[in-house]
Image (tube, rainbow, N blue to C red):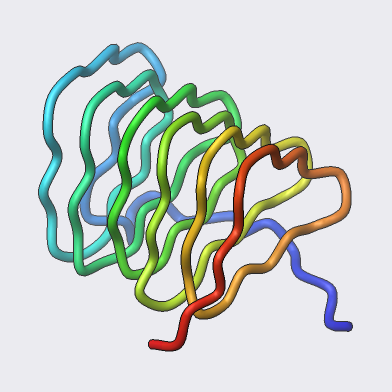
Length: 117
């Protein structure tokens, strides 16, 4: 089994960052990459990568290409490529993706469906 390591992103390489002092509600649609460091509630739709930061609390229905989680997520997560759960992440969600990677120390409660791309 391959070890995964939490991505330490250079935020200059991420198209959009929702800062840790932002509390946002609504629908987010984006094409490339987005990192949420603050709080978000609503719906997320993307063909790109969604990164949930370590301190982030997100309650959402998520549909993206790649979803990388280090923080807390409640809701539904669907990824067309992969879902990554890093240590210290806390997920209460139903997940569906062709590839799901969970690092030791991640907490996951919900259902998990692995479906072909």
